Length: 110
Image 1 (spheres, rainbow, N blue to C red):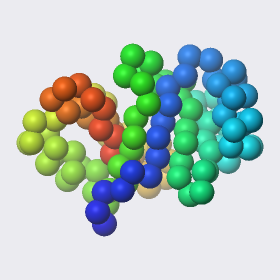
Image 2: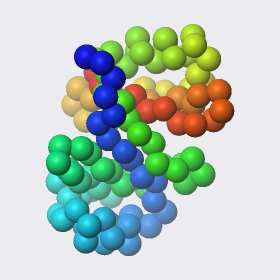
Image 3: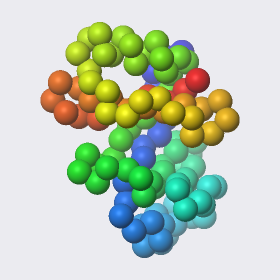
Image 4: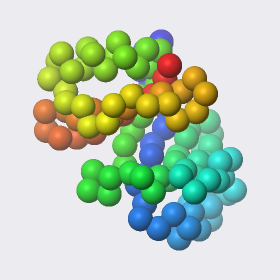
């Protein structure tokens, strides 16, 4: 699988007020938890995260087959790790790296 941007996660400081705005735009969320609110927009995931880093802003997550292999390749190419791989759902792991200019690069997959 070639990497494809499959999700964007938006950091929020007030989940309930952000949820109001995005629900008005996208309709009811498919996931509504205190740690994450997710919307499916024509198959594209738009998520709200109170754990996100507001100073970094939204993170586009690239869907990849092997998070560890792609992570290693990006680090070897000069990326730095912002957050280590972690499981966010059964069989789904995410991590965030930064490019040499500090821009976030998210990875999502197995």
